[in-house]
Image 1 (cartoon, rainbow, N blue to C red):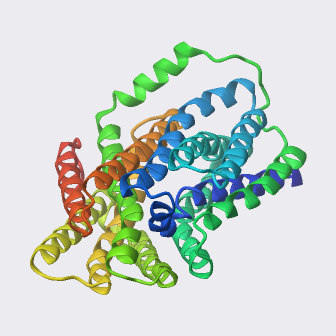
Image 2: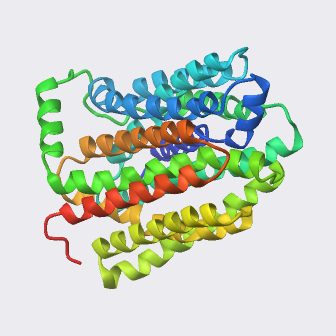
Length: 393
């Protein structure tokens, strides 16, 4: 029986993950306004997203071992305090460079929520109950960034001040920080044991030497790479270049997310008969089909926002087939789940940052650079899939 203290912990962890993940892209619909407000390039504005992902990815590798050594609550307090104040400072800036700086710190602080949050769940729950709770938290991780642009577009539609979507984050985060201070109870029974660097090194070596783990890791990370490029690039394509009203932008995202959910539901049914390996293959092929369709459509026709959305829908289903199965199969390859989870989370965010970096350099006012990126990353994923030892397809 789980006592009330642990229920408080679960609630606080869920809220922290929701807020820190929401912060990654809630202001994405306002990126064109930020570029205009600071008279800067699309590249620098997109950098505010990619630098946040870099902070999230790198800090996660630190917070895990640190929380094992000094306790979950202390590390959460450190990370979330950094997150709260950097989120506040993001809205009181005079240059784009300052936004980039505070967004980096925001990511570094926010990295504690998922890494330490999942470790906390492992401390409290065991067996099937742990798996159920992990699944719920992973759903929050997956859907919070999807909800961000929807919420941000509605805020931006009613007020044209660029910083308002960003201002939502500290207004949510500080009250949860107070809950963390007052209600969260330490879950690690043995603390102050010190960090054993030899064990950490051996653990990373064991995980990274597994070929199949690396293959599945790269497939899901390459998918995140083009996904984040898509999230950051679409506001410029739809709002700035295709003249979609800001208040309508969220509807396009809702349609895409709905189809993604359909893909997840379909995967849960089909994976029982086809197996996870085949579902990954089907997912990559669907994503590749979308990328090729968008590429040729952009070259030979004038695409409207509606047509772009329709051509993107197979990719949304493909993502639903690919991510969950690749994640599950990658973790089946090894026994050290903590280290593997840290590597997976960090690599996904780094590839997401790389995708944003590439698309910010290649942005030309059309969706062509993004569609080519989708094709290239999908082809690489197919090649990697062929390297997996004895896939049952």
